[in-house]
Length: 460
Image 1 (cartoon, rainbow, N blue to C red):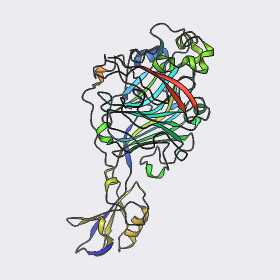
Image 2 (cartoon, rainbow, N blue to C red; image 1 turned 90 degrees about the horizontal axis):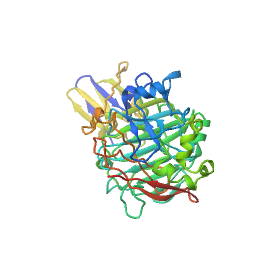
Image 3 (spheres, rainbow, N blue to C red; image 1 turned 180 degrees about the vertical axis):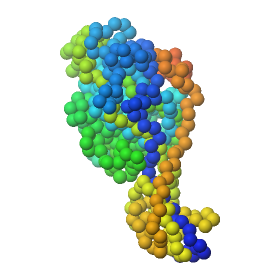
Image 4 (cartoon, helix red, strand yellow; image 1 turned 60 degrees about the vertical axis):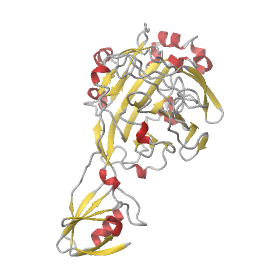
């Protein structure tokens, strides 16, 4: 409904449009300073791995920022000695509650026998603050798994259904790590349909972009092969509403804000352990060595390609204007600008959108069409444009100061009923007091007919 409002003096119509604004840019120049390097053996997943400090990794050639890219690799020159092959685990110094995480990769470590790489987030007091697995797999898996892990009370829709629109299959729907009727710590997970999402084919096509949107109502993950992402994905004001159906959608019977808070961003690459090692004998990798550890220990050159190459990593927070009043009926949504338009003595504006403050009338629109209509409906002077960036507050992680993790030996173990799709939690010697995950074996269903196994670990 529209009505006419008479202003006794010239005012301003404020046209606010929804979107995201940049919170943190993990740029090449400051990338490593924004992470803590976890050090020591990977005892929590029983991985055959030795995580190095930043200085040790630099000396060993495991990290660099050549070619304006971030490289994070493993030792591929030496026969490994106990406690395992040298590798990396990085956890962000900052924590996040809500946001849009956009990772553009040229290369990932997946698709190699013996490896277990992951890009994910987790919060304190696991699983009470949640875990979001964005990229994960083991050995020569060809498809990415995306999984949530929570305490009791969180579930998602579409159990055991294949969605050809999103290009993934939901195989477990209860995110509770102790859910009845699911393998321990399976969580709720989706397996990507396309083999371009992970490992060898991901790398051969030049990489790709993963974008993860975390709001109060849902957690959504998009994937695009290199060169196919929408133009605004890594820009100043990305707008997920124009990106189409996500690859993975987690929503339904879960109050997201009650189960996910103060998450760190994590890169890691462990070897063997309670997943990659446990399924070694039933995988095609078994023909290469009698055990996962024997292969990883004695074949350093096999891991020359086990590295991350990061083109960019950015975290955005939702612009506060995105919560403004809805657009008039029939007006499509758009985003990313805020304009002050001088108003003459009278104008017509949507009744549902008007909020007076002193001599200024605030009108929130959600489309460029509405903006043009509002501007043309009054006798205006030339438009004066002002861009407004409003950052959504995020909570700190008081239980996890950087000093408590930089030299701790912690890694996550996770699992999923269908194989890929979950990391775990830090071990008990981390001062965060995180719990460990339970060990078990289970089968990984690839779509509807392919099977792989996986074991999990939980240590007190």
